Image (cartoon, helix red, strand yellow):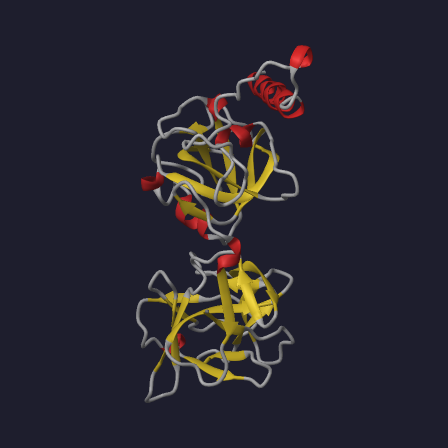
Length: 331
């Protein structure tokens, strides 16, 4: 009932002010105060943009700026929901203090010390993005109480309440990231040592947490460049060439090296090693005439290819018809 009341309050306050703002004389409508929570900490009404994200209050009543499918929301991380206990937010399912159980979600509030269930919103992460790996409280309890701006789908219900689904990108603080700021171009020819993004068909590969498929960041392409919607966390892979062998190592942003030791060439996943001299960590990187690269695991004989079915970059045998990736650098 309290959330229904908040929604009614918002409409009652905002719509009359918009419709009658210029009236005068006997028909004038007295000024209607803006509800608490509509304005951010700078006293500005949230707009859902990266510069002026929605407030937690706005997200909690299901607002969505006109013409926007996704928005930025700013607030403080205050807890998470243990979905093993309940599929709804309740005193029994909410975890306010560590240890936290789930990596799939967090709760946000307008203040860092909020413990009121009527003043929080649930945020559900999309697998494979930095927001999940770096904001979930099970792995990152130090993020409790931190102020963040997160990009995702609002005006939808999650755990039975309005909040955010499909959270992808984030930035600590009061503002988000200008989505058009990340510009990349494809490299060509023999590959110099450096950090690169692995790209194909609108996806940029992302650092893996476990041995599995390598999921990518959604991106858009045009005019010979790729405009990724995550300017941070995209140049995830550092290639370093051994001048004696001609082989490369590929180091993730977390410091581990991609490797494969044994296993079927039809298995598309990866392993990790801390040892760059590991036989399975040796890769042959060859430029192709169409701008793609063949990144071949020397031990296994399989190459990194994009799988559209899973939107991921897997290891596939040489006879596979899955497309080879491009390597990108930041402009």
